Image (cartoon, rainbow, N blue to C red; front, side):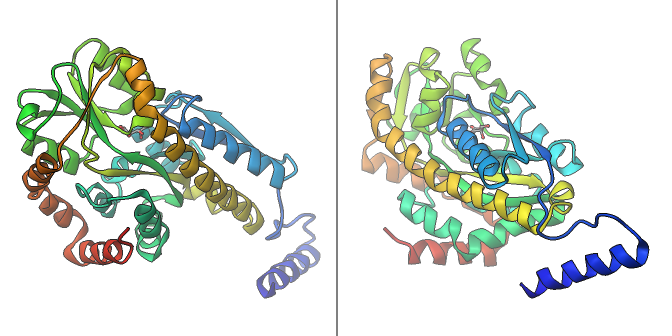
Length: 338
Ligand code: TK8
């Protein structure tokens, strides 16, 4: 309130002494067009949440702030969009934290194999102080983090064979996100890990440039990977967050009111998205089976062997984020134990 009064006063003073007509006050809402890009289809958990965010922003701003949504990577791959945000050529996006590691290395902490065991635990850590601290690291690189959404626990699909133990990865060309921890983890499993942007994944599977990939059930369903993949192996090897980001260059030019509206919408969409994702995930296996996928659960003993095999990849995480931050996240995870 005090800040509002001061800035209103300053605006009035400036306006009268300098003879300026309009000075941008902290509670202004100006007509703006916001380009919001994302990688999945409109008909996906990601697409539905972006639509909700756009509606919320329109409602709260009386239609002055217009979020134009661009799905299916039509503005570019996650990596290209991140750079467009930094440069100020695009305003907002949502994508995996894993793709941000080249920009903000601390994001690699979320790539720790088997970090979370349950989605509620992930919510607590991501929405807690350490999650915010890591998100705030984006600012020095020209991005503003608004909210973590759920991509989800990742599972493996491929066209060669069911993965029942890590040795079954041997020789499989597996697309991974362009991220050092993912590359390292799957090399240790014996796969031929091939980093590729998500926007090229369907075609790569279809043309057999790669044999497999790993993503949450929701994405396997919404991106129709069942059309080009036979086997789905339930590994839950890592929980993958999405993150809503804005161009800092653009964000800093918004009034406090405008920022507040967009932040509130990103958080409201987050809550709805997590519910939607969990509901859809709980029914996805049955749907994927109907689409002809052969599904196997990996036994707890073999998951344990995968965990041990992946263990040295944790060093790659620590090298990127530092021991202190790594330990801090581990402590938060233990506090939030399911
Ligand atoms: C969508 C991606 C996707 C991610 C991946 O743009 O690349 O596999 O899981 O959700 O961010």
